[in-house]
Amino acid sequence: MRYLLGIFMFALAIYSCESGKSAMSGNTDTASERMDTLRIANDSLEYEIIIMDIGFNNWLVTQPPRGYYGLNFLEGKNRLFVSEYNRRVRDFQLYDPNLYQQQINYDFNVDYGYEVNYLLYNYFMFFQQKYNQSFIGGRRGARQ
Image (tube, rainbow, N blue to C red; front, side, top):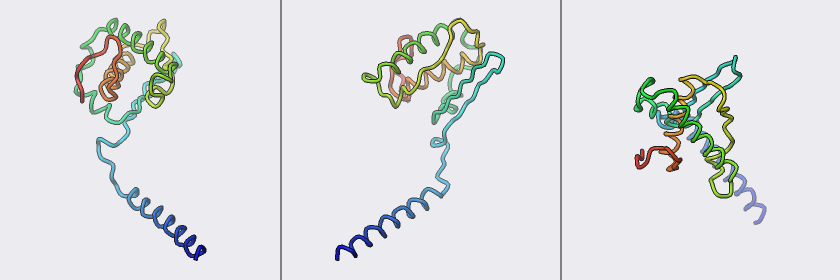
């Protein structure tokens, strides 16, 4: 009897794995479920920013356009946000390590240009809104 029960459990496990495959193989990829990936790179400065978060691209088109903020404003905000974000990465006992996985290497003495600062600033705004986080100098109250 124990032998039959073992075979039954094994067959059930195999069956459940197969049923998951058929559900996963279907095209269930909706616009809100696809991972947004945005890559910004500059080989001469040897930096690369890769933003991978569901919904970021759709959110970005609803924000003020490029040129709305000045470069000095964006750089100042990014200094605050990067410092706070990196502090939270290091303080993994107080902040969720699933949200704050690795530090951002943003050198305050490097001129990354407008595009990088604009996208990084907007990602921090998106991050705060989506994950209900609050950084000093960030927007308050607006939830998605």
